[in-house]
Length: 255
Ligand code: PGA
Image (cartoon, rainbow, N blue to C red; front, side, top):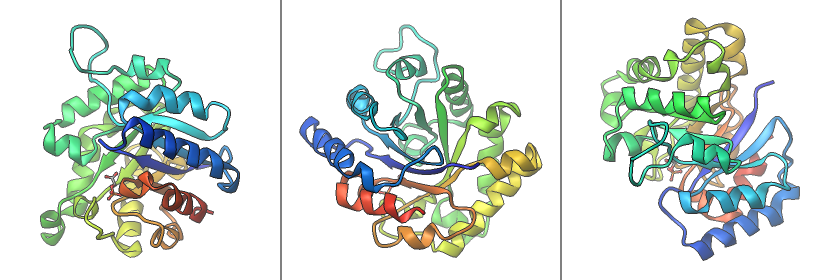
């Protein structure tokens, strides 16, 4: 059965004390979340806290830690990088790959993203692979073509077996951190398109099982409506994941 996933992406936010407050808050609210094997919460903190998050969540099934990035290299003299192997050794289960901020500010290329996906999967981390178009691309009505290319250039190069252990997040760049959310209809349309592409490239069963998350200004007020869409299996939440009450509301909005 396809998993519902609410993922928080703290980005480069939260001091240690703030991180502790968020983690304790989520644990305090845990029993209200209604988590199960099929509805999980993923928290992608900055690297210095991932071990802390993973340890704190260890007693809470289906509340799991994630990394926001991993190196495309296996190991060695790459100062400042963090490998998938290191991340996996900290009991972290997921890693965000190809976030638009990594593509834009750190110039990550499709080739690098594929290497990162391979690294993640070699170490049993589940990639949350992000795609999404700019406003200009959407205005030019090229958004489907653009997202298809992002899929084909990286995540679609894994094999039939490995694609089963991937999550895709659709995050239109114009909706990230802007307060402008894609309408449920816009999001649903793209999610259905992505699922169709997975089906065409791999097979219908894999497409049916794949979790496809929406990201971009998801908040406590708009989550419930987005989650009514047939092909939206959860959210990748930035700003609102730093506020325990708002993030908890979003988690509970996923039925
Ligand atoms: P946002 O970020 O919720 O703050 O728009 C989403 C994301 O970039 O993952």
